[in-house]
Structures are given as structure tokens and as C-alpha cells.
Length: 509
Image 1 (cartoon, rainbow, N blue to C red):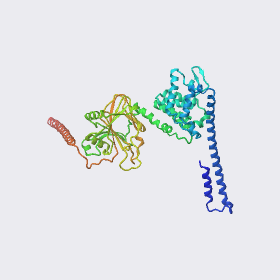
Image 2 (image 1 turned 45 degrees about the horizontal axis):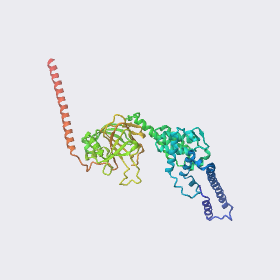
Image 3 (image 1 turned 90 degrees about the vertical axis):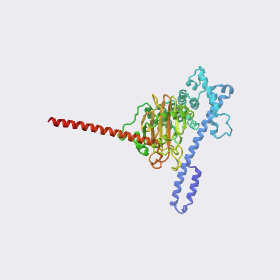
Image 4 (image 1 turned 30 degrees about the vertical axis):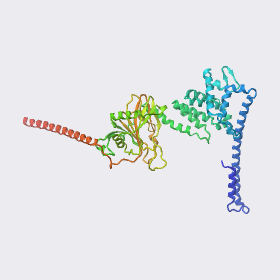
């Protein structure tokens, strides 16, 4: 909204132009139009001030009503848990400070005090087996008290329970908060962040943590619908849209979205990039072209798998407790690094170390992108900017262990010794949102090695050719020579057979 003082300044600056208002009625017409706009802005400004006054009066009425109830016997009044808990909540969330009328330090009533009060209130519910709705309405152990919990009080109890990982109980209090909601207090609740939009958002987060995805999405939609026009409800909007990916991810993990059978996808020998691959190509199974996703079979030997697992055992650190995931960074041997460069086409000199991920029971890696968009496309790139990811599979699991690509709507289970490669950026070098991926929960322990590249494509010049190439070359040469000898031998035998049959028939005639 434009401040009226700025409008007056605007009015003054307009008159500064070289116009002759006193001698020309035509030049005075714009002044009338400007005056009309000024009146409209002043009316809007007055209405907003009146809304603030009305909100302050609601605050005043509620505080006065509670204070008058305490005058008869203050000690007995605060002994009621339905009075004492909201009172602590009132000062812990700084209601007085919102009015800007009292300049007093209220830091003594801390969040810790609020948690103690909530714990005590909920302890009464557990010990005396009280119903949540009865407590909210002031009905305790067969006695109806002249007090009740507001929607904001119930919301605070629900948030506290969610922090304790008690999602089911939290959702009960969120529902009661909606039942107790007084529309007349909506302006106050919006200031205190306890309006219906916030209640639905908190319920959505609790349901999401319990993997009740459809109900969670519906709650976020309600939160967005009830948001004020000027309210920043980015989180609910974001989760409403992106939960669709979660639905697809669950279907991928359950094996309901297999790899699409498209005519342009191929299983072939991969020979591009390095001269080494001309002699010993990798077996590539194309899974997607834009962005590229492919699985290379038999990339890492059994001995290398065991060596990497043993190397990581003393370095594993718990990274994500809720996902049963441990990680360790190791230095891969030179041949393995070379192999990763060959199949990815990227230089690993500036990439991160090889990371070994050890998944415990139910371990998973949630939906994420392996790429962070850089502010400036100039080397050296940030560590989070990964052009491609290579994932090596060091073990098999009897169930689960799928890799999921929610935006591409497919998932599959790689086999031990294979390497999964996917590109995280598009042709312009921007992070590609289609490469969203996740690892489904593993019912048994399993290990995965992951490397990433952020450099340029590897050329054929200046490449180191390993001593194993000589062996591979000799093997292929001998193998081809043997195969050719067998073919020639069979051709000679067949020729001799047909020649003898021809001569026999000739003499028989």
C-alpha cells in the first residue's frame, strides 16, 4: 500500500512541472484525477488501520476476560491445568510483544518452560486416561470446569507431540484444534501463526512423517486454500505439488513401474571414449536417453567389491539416523577410477572421493537431486554441481534395493557388480529436474559405492593405457584366431563332404 505522505510528495512533485494551473482550466483537470486517487488510497489506509484496531480490541477482550476470572482467587485459578498451560503459552509465544505496547523483557518464559508445561499437561491425560476432546472442552474426571482450550492451545499440544515423534496423538490434537477454532479470532490467530492454514500444514507434516501420503497431500491443499493472500505458505504449496513424485516413488519401490520398453533403447557393447574400450567394451543397457541413464554390467570384480567394503568398515559414519544409512569416503584404486571415467566420459580429477553407502535394515536414500545449480558457470565448479553420478553395486539383497526415478516413472533393481550411470545436467549445463532419484528401503544390509564427476569429457589423447590392455589384446587376438580356425576347419570338412558325395554320384551314373 502506498503511504499517504508519499502521495503528498507525489502531488507536490507533479505540480513542479511547467504547467499553468492558474491560467488554464485544462491543466487543472489532472489535479482532480490525482486528488481522486489520493482519496482512494487514504480510504484504504484508514481501513487497514481500523483492522489493526479491531485486532487489538480482540486481544484486549480475551485478556480482560481471563484476567477477571482470576481476581477472586488467583492461586486457585492458575491451579487449573487448562488455565496454567494456556497462560504459559501466551507469554512463551510473546503475545504481549505483538501489540508493541509493553516494553518489557519476557525472555524468562522460554520455550523450555512451554515444553515442561506441555509434558505435564499430557502426563495428566495419560495417568488419568482422559479423552482429548473432553480435556479441550474443560471436562476433567467427571467435572465440568469453567474453562476450555483454544484452537491455538490445541495446536501447540499437537506440535509438541509431533516433536516427540507421536504423530497419531498429534493428529488428534490438530483435529480438535480445528473443531475448537473460533472464526471471530481469525485476525489474532493469523498474527500468532495459529490460524487454520497453519493447523492444516502441521497436520500435513505429521501425516507425511507417518507416510500417510494421500491424507498428507489433502491437508497441504487445505492449508494452501485457507492461506491469506499475503501469507507465505511456500512449504505447503511445494509439498502439495511434489507429493505426486512420492506416490510414483512408492509404486517404483513396489516394482509396479518397470523399465519402459521403448524401441529407441538398446542393449549394446559400449566402445566410445577410450581406446581401452575398443579392446574390452562394456555391456551397456540403455534405460533412458533424456536425461541419459544406463546400467553397465560386470564393471567391478568380486575382489574389488570386497576390498572396497573392507576399506570402508573402519570409516563408516552414521549420516542419516532416520534412514539407517552410514557412509564412508574412500580412495578407489587407479584401474577402478579409470573404469569410472571410461563409462561416464568424465574426468574425475576435480570430483569428490568415492563414497561407500552402507544401508541398514530399512535403509534408504530419500528423493533428491545430485546437482546444485551454480550461480556462475565458471571453473572451479562448486562441489554440489555434479554433471553425472556413477553408482557401483557391491552386494545383492533378496528383497528391495530398487533405484527409483520418480519424474521418469520407473524403477529397477540393479545387480551386484554393475554400475548405474545417470546425467544430472541437461545439454545447456543446467541441473535437470528429471534426474530426481531415490533408493528404496533395503530389508537387509547392503553396500553401494558412489562417485560423481564435474569435469569435461575425456579425450583419447594423453590417456594412460594400463598393462592389462596387453593381456586383453592378446586374449582377444587368440580368441578371434581360434574362432576363425574353427570356422575354416568346418568349411573344409563340409567342402570335402560335398565333394565326395558329388564324385560318388558321378561314378554311380
